[in-house]
Each structure stands twice: as C-alpha cells, then as structure tokens.
Image (tube, rainbow, N blue to C red):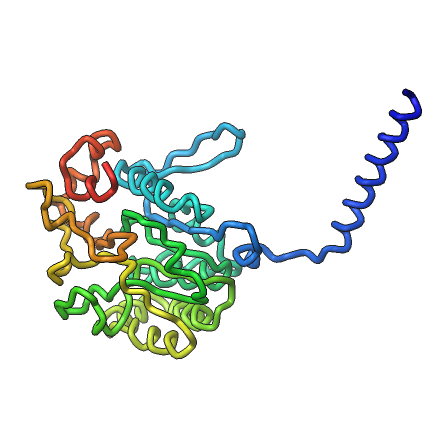
Amino acid sequence: MAVQVEYIAALVGLLVVLILALNRRKPTLPAEDFVSLPGMKPTLWWFVEDENNARSWLDFGGRSTTEPNRGYLKVALEALQKTQGEDFDIKPLIGRDAVLAQVTGAPPAAKQLPPALWRRWAIANLLNCHGGLVMDGDSTLAVGPRFKPLLAGVDAAAFGVTPDEAIVNPTMALAPGPSPYAGWASAARHPAWTHAADIWGRLVARGPQAWSSAEARREYMPVFEAQRKLGLQVIREAEASRIPDGRPRALEDLFGRVSAPADPKTALTPGAVYVPYDGDDLARRFEFNWFLRMSPAQIKESDLVWARLAGF
C-alpha cells in the first residue's frame, strides 16, 4: 500500500513538473489578443458617464467593483447581461477614468472632451487597444436577440445609422454613415480603428478650441469614409434607431407610456439587438429628470416604453 501511495505521489510530481515546463515554453500573450483565442468569450466594454454617481462594493469573491447608481443604468446593464452575457465577457467601465485606465498611453486631456467627441475617442481607442464590442451604456438599451451571430466573420464593424440622417427609410440602406454608439473589432489593432484612434488622438492634442471646431464641422464623416476604405463594415439592422414606419425613434417615444399591447412605439425593425438614444440629450432635458431619478424597481414596474423594450 505504501509503495502504491509513493508511486501515485511520484506521478503527480512528474505531472506538475511537466505543466510548469510547458508554461515556461509558452509565449506570453498580450491582453489585447485574448479576444481572438478559441473558446474564450470576446469582451463587451460597456462604458457610462456616471462617474460621480458610482457605488463601490465587495462582491462575493472579495474583489472591489463598481456599479452605476442611476436606476436606469442598472436596468440597462441587467438587460445587457441577460441578452448578451452568454456570448460576451461584459466589463462595465463607470466614468471616464475607468476608460482611460484601459487605454495605453491615454492623454489626460481626453477626459475633458465634449460628450460626442469623448464617445468617439473612447470607442476607437478601446477597440484599437483590445478589440471586442464597445457600447455607450448611456445611449443604448439591449433588447435581444444575441449580437454575436451578426459579427461572425466580421473583422471590424459599426452599427445603425447616423442620428443626423434625415432619410425616412425603414431599411436604412441609403444612410451615409453609422451611429456613434457602438463598435466592434475581432482583434486589436484593426487598421480602421487604429486610424480613428489616431485622428481623435491628434484632435485631443490640439486642445479645446479645436474640439469645438471639430463638432461644428461634423468631422465624423471623413473619418468614417477612411475607415470604410480600411475594411470597416456597417451592420445597420443591429440598431433599432427607427420605428418600422421609418420615422426616427425619439426620446418622447421611448419615455412615453405604452398605450396598447401592439403600440407601434414598442415595435422593432427586423434584426435589431439594441435601441439607441441620445444619452447626452436625455441628461440635459429637464422634462426627463423624473426618469433619471427612478429606482430600478420603479422602472421595471412602470408602463414606460423603455421598460417594455428592456424586457420588463
């Protein structure tokens, strides 16, 4: 019996030595390459501006983490986890500092960018550094189905239609550019996102006067055209920015009450996996302050279109 125990112990020791040897021979993989490793979930970076309203706590593993304090953001994150958690490793980034910490060599001045430019800077740089799926949590509501099948075989993508587009077209096929609220890269350093990160990085370096000029000139379309030539695809059907009759979905549509079981304001265009809205405008408009103050329970129990689309 003693011989048998010694034999087993010797085998275990040899196995440990073999594992250590293999690990020493294995090259170190940079974090940004993890998105493309077989069997691993790609990362979904979900960032919000809720920096001054974040709450930290220790989770069950004793690790420090953070969640947004605003009720609707908690509900939006819950809907995202419910619809996309099977396919993605969801990483919430609460506040601009959390985003900057994920971007190698991020200039501190980027934290001061106006919201629209900040959003573009954050999406481009997160995708350039890490790859994965990036979504502006302040401006998107995941409604399902799964996002991942739309991304199969796609190296780089943007989604939906630019909010400035005036064309009333249910298919959105004629829209000139994508929505600014989300982006995808199957791996880090895709040329399209490297180009965008470089352009927005140069803009940051030029200072606040250049930022105002860039917004006034709407410099987003030239960047998109260059990205498209570098391989960026636009998956328009992923985003339900319009109701089925082609009219753009307004804040009043989302934060009104459901008037009937078949209310057209709750209808989604085919293939939609998330609903966008201007989160900056939502935070600015005093007539929606009541929604920003609602708790998750109040939102879930309400008859708001937004809550219905979130699955409650």
